Amino acid sequence: MPADLVPTDATRPRRDERGSFDRALIYSVIDEALFCHVGFVGEDRPVVIPMLHARVEHQLLLHGAPATRLFRVLAKAPEICVTVTLLDGLVLARSAFEHSANYRSVVIFGKPHRVRGLEERTAALDAITDKLVPGRRPHLRPMTENEVKATAVLRLAISEASAKVRTGPPKDKEPDYELPIWAGVVPFELSRLKPIPDPRNLEGLDVPEHIRAWGTKA
Amino acid sequence: MPADLVPTDATRPRRDERGSFDRALIYSVIDEALFCHVGFVGEDRPVVIPMLHARVEHQLLLHGAPATRLFRVLAKAPEICVTVTLLDGLVLARSAFEHSANYRSVVIFGKPHRVRGLEERTAALDAITDKLVPGRRPHLRPMTENEVKATAVLRLAISEASAKVRTGPPKDKEPDYELPIWAGVVPFELSRLKPIPDPRNLEGLDVPEHIRAWGTKA
Image 1 (tube, rainbow over the protein chains, first blue to last red):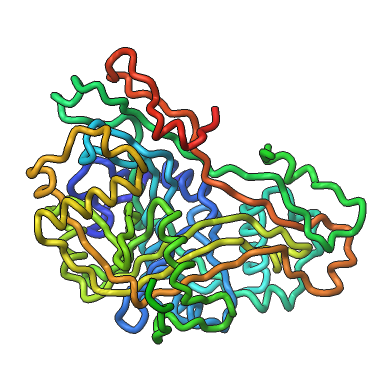
Image 2: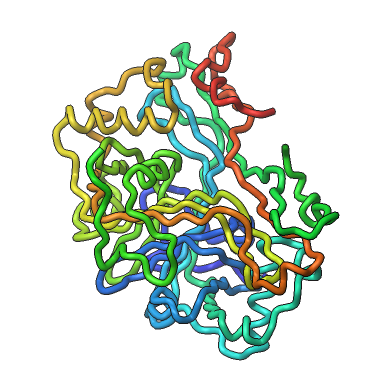
């Protein structure tokens, strides 16, 4: 892994101490999140859209239908901002003022580039499928050339980026610690529930191992 | 509740049929989500930041420290974009190409305004606390005037907004339904886990009812 990232005017932390340029931390947040929010300027207005993503080495990958306005605008944008957020919990303090959230977030700035070659694009789409459902791709009907051609892929170098993290208990004003008020953290987790089979599945097909391995709950 | 919203150039759905202007749907997504992503243009660059939010009637509320660059920029922005996304599940098709996500998202465009008066600001902060942890506020040390003064609140009218929703099983290409590949949906849920008491809690304080009522898991 290359060295940690370098702050720029856009990513340098301001008021607080939560900012980090630790590459391993930044990548772990990107990899754990299933989707991101992509911000761009469209006709002078800020626009924010949720998208699925994947990371391959030091590039973030986004995909979509090439004919959509979204993709035409993104592919030409001089710069976009991709933000990934994991909400880890609510921080319940003794005063409303000190309530907060525990979270890990990453912000990436940069110019996206179209992934052009068919082979390169196939590899990128495979990476996106592998991230979405690890272990599933070998069980699927293989992608056709037309499907690859019908999908636009953008890559964004993860170079101007930073992470922000808040963890731990509330930080109350010192006198408030004397109050008989329960304080603490309520942790959150994105749980996978029991898979719902497609009503059109062929008879006798069981939930495959790569999905059962997720440890889904009833 | 007033009539449903009216599409504009920014919110009119493009390629797909997933867009909706149903006010009840839009409000339900905003109310279920604990946080949103706020997009603005800062020095000609798009910036996307996660923030906690609340809704009071037809206004979205955001809050923060008034001295931060973020709040100074937001308060002056001619327009921001607030996007709220709930990921409901992964849609596992028979081909990689048809994999998708079930989700509900809302995009709101508009100019934010500072909530000025002390009383109005107190009511807004109370609404934010009530949304974050319903039933908790009566148990807290009351907010002081200085705390209200130290918090900036922005309101954004929910008038130029739309929702997008995907639900249901995968939509595979017709011949793929003959393949012996398990397809379906893996639903997601943001679960609250067992509360972690602040190590500085006074002795003998139990997890209060307003938190136990969340039905947290071990």
